[in-house]
Length: 357
Image (cartoon, rainbow, N blue to C red; front, side, top):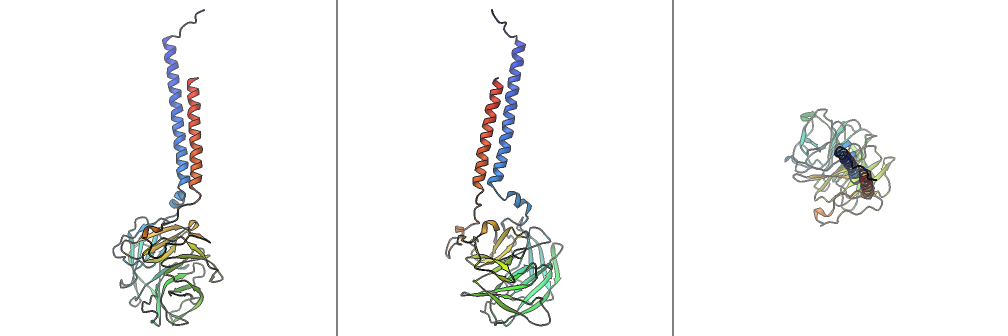
């Protein structure tokens, strides 16, 4: 018995259905592949989402030619992503606001009500919303019998502004010394200064409240290594100190740094002068002097470990150290990608079989 041949219309209908099914399968598989690829990229590149949520947590270059000796950094609390900085010396009573998204200066603050700055080395933001500028350097090896701190309210509006600052006189209980690090505790508001010494520096604690009525005596409370800047974490639980070749973070308890601290994988910078935390505390920002200087971001989670790797030794090339590579995320991303590819190829085979059926 001969079966009747299908008509031309039936063949056309079948072919159209097959093509349609194949197209649908291909489109579905392609969409699935795109979705898996997107998930894989996010997994392989950790911090993408957090970086988008945390302004000011990426490296940037200071583009303003007027800023040639950036010697301090402080993250703004009023203007997300903006960092306050200043020149080392011979610049005048100026503080600059730099937008980390572009590297451009978005504010220049001119301080009045103070004398002529001598050797400005540090800046820190207190819990009272005021910026503290440390005119505490002494390149004459500790011969100044006093130094100064200037304090003014962080500007609410960006741009070029003139503000009246308060000037405080500072003396050290054990005599004059050179210093480059000033830190204001973000909870107590107490001011600390770390002296700079080749053999052993000291951490000095100021009075509970600074006074304009006379000299504010700072007393030594701990030994510290040679440091060029320091900063408290926003919650006040850690103190970061950096020098030319190393950096460490210390647990902070009862007004004192605890233990030997944890080594930080700080970047190599020829004139390593500044460090601060981002406003959310997730990242340490390391700055240096020089024209078009680079501010390098080092995530806190990846920055410190009890046995952290050492920074490059003196004489190492500038590229010998960079921000540490993310750990534990590439493997997760690879697994996600591999699993996704299995799903994609499996889906393609399934749709092809259905199309043939």
